[in-house]
Length: 439
Length: 194
Image (tube, rainbow over all chains, first blue to last red):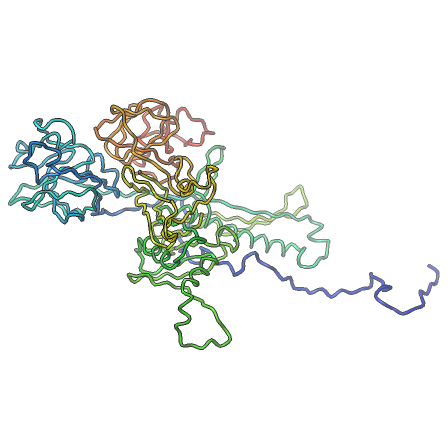
């Protein structure tokens, strides 16, 4: 190249600087923005860690204890059912046994069982069930017989029968007084009262546990980078292998957390390899769900107190404290419900005003700590939702805990990376959790 | 009216008090009584309308908004499920409809179902009241992965090989259909041994 001195006239300004020689000032640090307003509060921060699952289906046994409360949805007095009279102390009750529907076809109760009726205050002795009737003497031949109309609600006054319709019992008032009529009432079971030196009875009741399960889900995420991109091109952090892997892992961990919340329990057998999906918190909560409309509610505290008493603490086997993972707007509404309280303090606001309440004490000694979580993202349909959880009833069982594998196939030059997670959650007693949601 | 729900829901008024309370997934208000979702005075006593979607095209139908509707609208908060009316002790099943025995014993396709059992209508044969005074109502579709009852567990584990052409247990359509007619691509297929 010939000698060529590049000299020009005029002032040097940014318009005639050589762009190739410009040095930019680029901050080396990447500043990340999350879609979540706060660091994510997740279920696994609170849940217990269980053992490694030993099969694809994690089964557990649950047992619902006997409930002494029953509900009588129909009561017919003996005087109404038997026109000839003489049955004023008798009545035919339809007992729903809602807590044990399986017993309804043959009735849990036996003759000589005693029931207390909330509406009238009377004690009633069961004298006839769908399978037996009370022995008036010492042997079966003395079994009580009652008019068909009293035992079954239909038929003849003169036909005498010794069993009644399934789902019903015939009772007799223990006190020397007529049966007091009512239409519906709660009923409490008081057990069997026997006569003096009565022979030992043969009425047996057995209890059964029930089974619940969840399935082990296998998730993966992968990334591929070409050899040239990885080894040949010198780039800033954002384009490097390390950056990509880091983000991949972060996304994947969040994915698992969302699965803990929203997964649906299911096994898909329609191909030759089964796909198993684990049920998340939303799927697990079957009993205590309250739906509310935040825009029409006029007394949030009243509502919240009802929700906590009725649902959040309907069952509390692990003590009186629970946690609510709440959307931002729900927490805001909770605080706003007590906005007048800040005027009751003698503190002089020192440049700050507002209210930051997060714990609600429920009558009965229960305490609910509300924690904002952007799992229930602000400005979405979830912002008014809240999950009440008892962490002791959530057991995360992991087989593969974010295991990674980097590899190159023999015939190709691309670099691959895979991250996998395999595990499930054993939801113990779902009745301890509750969900407060909007439509 | 009798209502069922998938959860033990409470229906709240605008003032936060509870208007209706489901227990054991149902609420029976008795014949002639329905969940009143109409506007009341003062407005704070009205039921919170949590399903404001215009489900039927009629924006004034507040009951519809509150979730009343046909049974298989499962996205609804609750649905009507009255005790079905037997005519002379029998009732024609509806194919694809699920039933729950509320009380007593019924028979359908030569199998007996007792209170608490759930079964699916697979044809239009009659459901018969065996015990007298039996009650049935429509219910939500069963779920293969739902809590498996004790009888089913025992049956599956101890009494079946898996390829039986018939004689499935009570909850037949909850994952225990006869295997012989299934292929490996069937959703309910499980391996069998004999």
